Length: 292
Image (cartoon, rainbow, N blue to C red):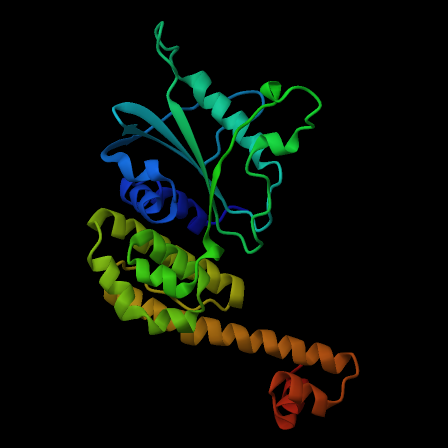
C-alpha cells in the first residue's frame, strides 16, 4: 500500500531544488555539473501505452545542457526488494516519453533522456543496469537493444557522509537511514542545514518528515500512536523528534522485546535463559506472564 510519506517523497523531487541537489551530490557524471538548473522545468504529460500507465512515483524534468534540451526521467523505487526487470520497465517508460514528444523537424533529432533510479530499499541493488545484459547475444551486437540507467542507492552512503554533505537530499537520506536516537543527537546540525536551504523546498521537506514520523510511529506501536505535532516550524519538529525517540521508538522496542520474551517462554525456554537473551529480569518476566 502506498504511504503518505511516499507521496510526499515524490513531491520533494517535483521541486527543482531537490533535483539539483541530487545531481550535484549523487550523480557522478561530468555532464551533471553543466546542467542549466535555473531554467529547468517539469515535463507534464499523461502519456499512456498498452504496456504501462504513468506512475505517481515517476518525475520528468526538462533541462538545458550545452544549449540543447535534455530530459531527466527520475524513477523513485519504494519497493523493499529489487525489481530485476527494471531495464525493461525503463525501456517502456522512455519509449512512451519519446512517443509523447512532437516529431523533430527534418535534420533535427530527439532530445537525450537521462534515466535515473532512486532506490531506498533495504537490499543492495542487484538488477542489471543495461537492458543488453538481459538479452541473449545470439545475433550481431548492433541489433541488441541497449539502454543504460543510473542508480542512486541511499544505503550506499554512510551517515557521516550524508550529514557532511549538508544539503536537503543528503538530509532526506540521512533521516531514513539512521536510528531515532542518532537523529535526535544531530538536531543542531539538522536544523542548521535546513536554515541554509530554499524556503519552499524546506517546507516540503518538513511535511515529508512529519508524515514519515507518523508512518514509522504507526508501524512500531500500531493503534497506541502518540499524538505528534502538526506544525512545520523547528520547535514543532524538535518536539516530534523527542516524541519519536522517547515515546515511539523506545516503546516499540519494549513491545517487540516483550513479544520475543513471551514467545521464548511459550517454547519452553527457562526463565534464566530468556532473561539473558532479552535483558528482562526474572521478576519482570514473571510479571509479563501474569499480565499475559
